[in-house]
Length: 351
Image 1 (cartoon, one colour):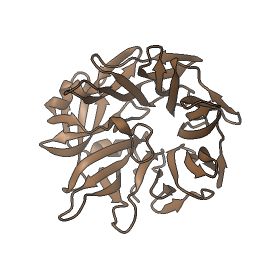
Image 2 (cartoon, helix red, strand yellow):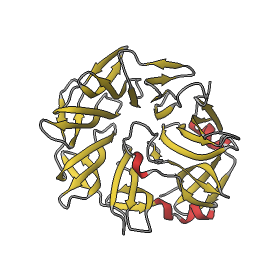
Image 3 (cartoon, helix red, strand yellow):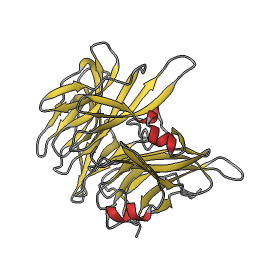
Image 4 (tube, one colour):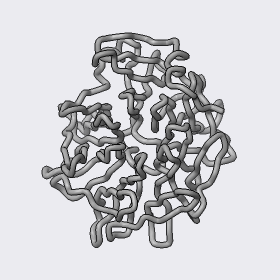
């Protein structure tokens, strides 16, 4: 079994603590295979297990894609056979159970299980610590959000329109995602409280919004159009939508994950001609930090993050490449000595 039993074991086995500084420690977790040209982080659980995908160079022919789980100081690669579609991982829960998709939504717990009740293509976007899975599936009426709980797959409906997707679920079974409103072409972020109906979150000033994550306190993170028609990361907390802004000089932002401390991580994108860029950020208590500019990462030998700005919420990819857990640890991947390495940012004591 690939799953770890203790977070402390993960930290102990990673003998490569590269640098200790006032703000962050950088743990270089290495690379799963010498053929890897890209590492894509999808999610991380509270035990420090990280799930995602990689691109593998081949001696002849196109590159291969594979999924991975990092646990107990080791990488476990799977789904890289040429006879099958590549496995795309989207989430991992506290028990180390992974969900994702290839031709349909799956659950992986040392073996693959197709989620029943999905006739066509489907993607499992998230799994709770209690094993409930949410995602998106193709139906005769179009794309619909679904929940799979206690062996039963249930279509979650829409906000009145013809489209919905579920992206996140917390321990209580509250679900978030986005859906079209009746007669609208844009989507609106929604939340489904346990046993309740799909409810639209208030706008941020514009029309579009999407929710990607929900913590165990019921706070929601995502992206929305503000009154200036710019896409901004948001935090929905205590009934209010909070515009988190973006990094200085950047055009847009997306919040993709958060924990119960209301630490939010995501990406900011700059579209300037000749100088495009995607940077990761962490927002906490009204302040947004550019994680790409951390001196600790540079001191550890990392020259850049491996991020994908266009993969936020997209069914065909693992996500933008950043994750956070309840301990405030942040997982990412970057280039070191010209090669992709997985790393973990751990806040220094007293931070």
